[in-house]
Length: 155
Picture 1 (tube, helix red, strand yellow):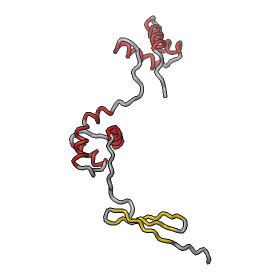
Picture 2: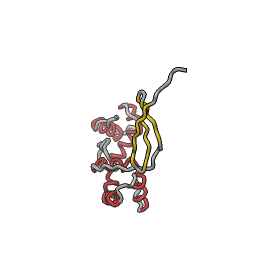
Picture 3: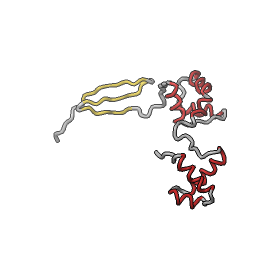
Picture 4: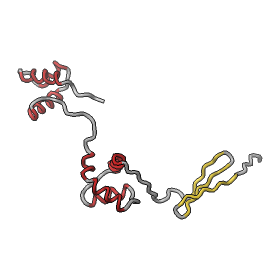
């Protein structure tokens, strides 16, 4: 991950610009880009010095945390609601959140959810040697039936 250039280098570059060097001349002299020099000048004008801001970290969870009451109320009222339905409900009130944003919200708050959506398959098979395990969906539960299969390799 990239690191911010040190404050000492920034102040030396800005001092060179203050003495009359152009942004490009100062950039070439100190081995930085001209765009960095112009950004540092803008920072110096805006906040008084060219100190770098914080790097990394979570910058956007505050938006979903501000609406935590709404999300927790929705989960409490309808615990079988899928995450996609949870995305749509606040969006109707003007608060749109992504799927991953809600997933991370639940992890931060220690909320675990078990929902059963529509079945992706009705019957599936897994082979284990000479035994096949059949999974059959029956009235919302998963029934497992074991059958022995005799393989005939002779022709």
